[in-house]
Length: 246
Image (cartoon, rainbow, N blue to C red):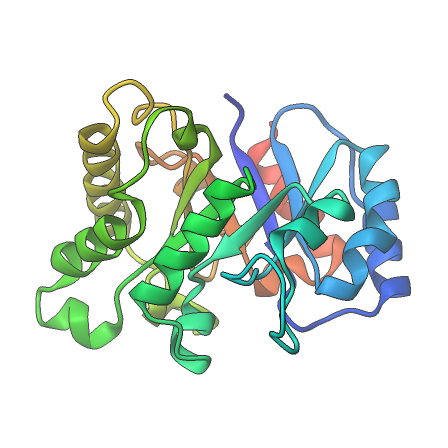
């Protein structure tokens, strides 16, 4: 399986800017590329992305299938605009919008019911790391969200480790920190599913940039990166692609 670079634009870019970005992405066949734009740009850029084999994801999804939930977007709606996957449990959703493990677990259940591939984001705060709670926090997040999955459901799963203290701060976890947590996640996935656990992608997210992406990709059990700030300009994202595609 190829490694993957995913651009998470968060609340940035209008539709025209999104199209211009796609048009300027370099084409190569060494790594998979995905973009996670705002909801309103998904359908707009999907047709452009198809021509370059770029996957398009959603930044969030409702735990409900339909109904009186003002402002929510369902998995069915995302599939209707040919969305390829969804991010669940991103640290900003957890911290700013108070989505706890129970909420994230219900969203995972909905993704499974709708057969929507998803990236489950997990990570510890700086206080939790300083208190030596990283393993406990990560294990609890994985248990809450994934312990009920069986069989072919594992084909829907990708995990992203994003230490909360490294997102948008310029701080990056050391190679040993990343290696240790990714090994923990891999062991947990194998425990959940001996058949599928070894092949599930585990991504790293947290101030990934062209200066460090190659080193991050060299770490055991790092199968790709979830990129924030460095993905907002085509030039800087192309630099990331070039660094890991040689």
